[in-house]
Image (cartoon, rainbow, N blue to C red; front, top):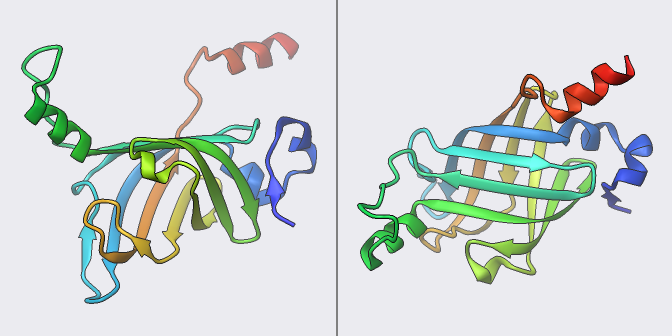
Length: 171
């Protein structure tokens, strides 16, 4: 039975589920086109991204192309809106953890077609680095069948965060 990660179950959470908790900064995102074997960068050489897993069973991911435009004004033009949309990737939902994978159950997405879907990520982590390999699927950017390979590193808690304050208050 898949493990649903919730606050009440943190004490009995698998080691993998425990290691996932927190925020992770994207290091790289490539994909392999299944038809040709070609490997390409998904959102530029150095995408800017964060994925977070909460003990309440929710997750969120935001990724941006490193050379994303800045609109000339507060309200982007129609052309700028298209460029901004084409240089990002984002969704949120709940997640379940199984032996070698995490499954994202998407309830909100930058692309409404993803809402209600499940995204399977085969994972490896040591608690400091996280590596994903997707199940074969259509690439959301060009529609070709591919496998995504994504690497993250754990982000440290900021100094003076609410969690730091509560930990020091009980010490």
